[in-house]
Picture: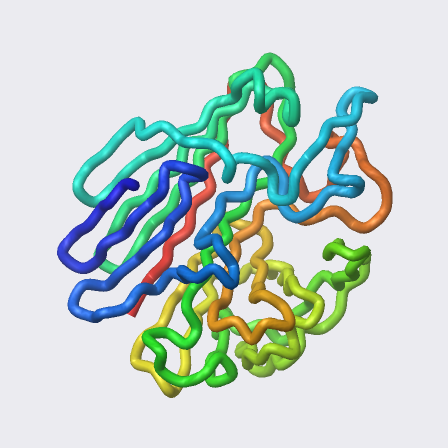
Amino acid sequence: MQIIENKSFKAEIDEKGAQLTHLYKKGVDFDYIWNNNLWPKHAPVLFPAIGRSNDESYLYKGQSYQMPQHGFVSDYDFEVIAKQTDSVTLQLMATKETKILYPFNFKLAITFRLTDLGLHLSFKVTNNDTKTMSFSLGSHPAFNVPIDEQGEFSDYQIVITPKIDQLNQFDIIKKPYPFRSGSKSLVPNYHNGIIDLNYDMFAKGLIILENYGIESLKLRSDKSKHSIKLSLKDFRYVCLWTKEDANAPFLCIEPFEGLPDIYGYPIDLMEKPDNDILLANNSKVLAYDINLK
């Protein structure tokens, strides 16, 4: 376990999956990050796929490859390649084992750095191969809601900045697992730049928002003096999720660069809509901030 801290915050990161497991603000006695066996994860990294693939697989150059839900990096131990008091960088490189699932010579480096306002996360994807690479990347942090046990889940809202007049989501169907249907609809409980949270709206699981220039999402309540704000400028989509039919006291706010499959048949990885395409010997950096009060 890697521990970083500054004068205001403290964070713990598990080398397995480079997963943020705890995030504390000093001077208050609570954890912002979910820790409970009702959903035994905290903030998994999604790479090189987001969500489920049709038949749990995809095609590349006519060959079928298996792809687990959300990719595979959460199952691997990352190497610590840089460490300071307030920051740590963990890295995973392709191996013979990963190439069975994903035949690319990739490198994924994730930096966690505490700031005066919270935590900055940076994801650097490098294609060390001689061929072009296609990937998705997401971050899946689960936050305790209510924050510091103040209020109830339904007392909380998501405030979207800048305010958007009409907000759409990608429709989800279960077959039996959630896939996109290919259609879109209005986000429930949305008005005047605010989404009012309740459990009913998560009956189908995921709520994936189109990013129409959304700069940030803020989780807040009139019942709490604390809040959580995520920046999203580098990510094209954001997903909201809590465990359906469980009245679970957490909410995941997930920056997505890529999308789950539309229900149907396995598709060619290089033609998968919304994936990022990275040329040989190139890198891409995606970053976001978690600002805490």
